[in-house]
Image (cartoon, rainbow, N blue to C red; front, top):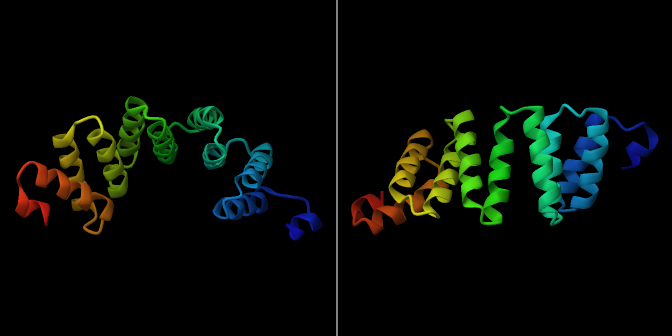
Length: 168
C-alpha cells in the first residue's frame, strides 16, 4: 500500500495487492484493486474472474454472475471461469447451470482430476451416480493422489455393493 502511494499504480501492483487482500478475506479492498486494474487492462480474463469471486464473497451473486458473463465474453476458452461460475451456481442450487459449467470446464481442461471430481459431485446431486463413478475413476487415473475423488468414489461403490472397490 505504501509503495502504491509513492508510485503511480500499475496493473501488476494492483493485482498483487488485490490478491493479498483476497487471501486476507478483505474482499471489498480486493474488489477495488481488481476494478482499478481492469480500467488499465479490461482484456485480462483472470481479473474478471477475480472480480466475480470477490463479488460472490461479498454476497453480490447477481454482480458475480454478471462479471463471469463478461469474463466469458473476453475469453470463452478460459476454463477457470466455468469452474468458478459452476461453484456459484451450485451454491444457489442451480444444478443444471452448475453441471453445464463443469462440463465446459472439463472439455477445456480434460486432464484436470480435481475438476472431474468436482463435476462428479454435481452430477451425484442429481442422481447420476453411475456417470459420476465413471468420472471419478477417470480422475483417479489422471491423478492417483486426487483425494477429492476417492471419498465419493468409495461411497458410490459401497452403495452398489462393491465393498472391495470401496476401499481401494
